[in-house]
Every structure is written in C-alpha cells, then in structure tokens.
Image (cartoon, rainbow, N blue to C red):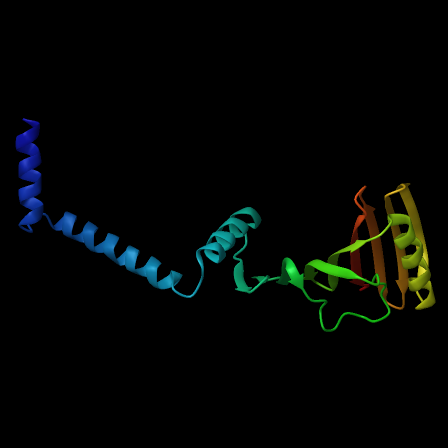
Length: 187
C-alpha cells in the first residue's frame, strides 16, 4: 500500500497534477535565491555575527568587517572593534595620554565617546604603574584614584577637562605586562 501511495504521489508531482507542490517548490526556490542574493555582499562571519547580536540585543545590527576591524551599527549608533597582532594606535589618539616606551596594540574598541585599548609591553608592572602615574600628571591629568591589588596588578584613574582616563596594569611572571587604557568624554 505504501508503495502505491508513494508512486501516485511522485507521478502526480512529476506530471504537474499537484498545484500545491508546484507553489511550494517555487516558494522554496525563491527563498533560496533571495538568501543567496542577500548574502553576496557579506561574509558568513558577518552574517552570523549580525544574526547573533540581533537576537541577543533585540535590535537590528549591521556588521561590517575591514581587515582586523569590525563595525557594529544599530539605530542607536555604532561601535568599532579591532584586534590582532599588528594593530596601529588610532590616528587621532590623544598625545597627552600615557603610552609605555615599547608596546604593541592588541585591541581597540570605540563606542559612544569611549575608547578602550589593550596594549602589551615588557617590564615590571609596578615600574610601569609609576611611569604611567608620572606621565599622566606631567601631561596635566589630575589623579582621582590609585589602587594596587598586588605586585603585578594596579589601576589608576585621572580626569582632565571633559575627559576621564583609567589605566589598568596587569603583569605576569614572564615580564609581560598588559595595559588597559579607557578614555571617555564626559557628557
């Protein structure tokens, strides 16, 4: 009995006797074509990222990638994120903010008047802590907070004009130090 029903089903669909099947097939083909055309301009990573962030945030999010940098755009604004081995300091990075003598930029995040950078440098955390404190104060920044968790972890906060800056320093036993810089324009 199953074989006869299956044969009848196939015969009806193959000879155009089932209009619902034709419509279903056309709709499926149209959806596949639309998905293919919509995907042409973006990488799979961008489309997956857009879908995941849109689902998590409840907002439509557009993602654009340019090399090591990704830009996320919503109706509320945009956020740029860059990470990699050979990043450059942003061209408009302020010259009155501490940077160690020899460093590598590991990541840059920019969103709504806030910029967060992650740098790596060699040295001792407490030496870089003192260097950062002295350099920021010499550039006219007022220290508002200093905190040392232990010999390898410390944080400084400063303000100047309408800006705030936080410098976090985290060292390890191998002489590698991660420096976090957070710069924010006060509203």
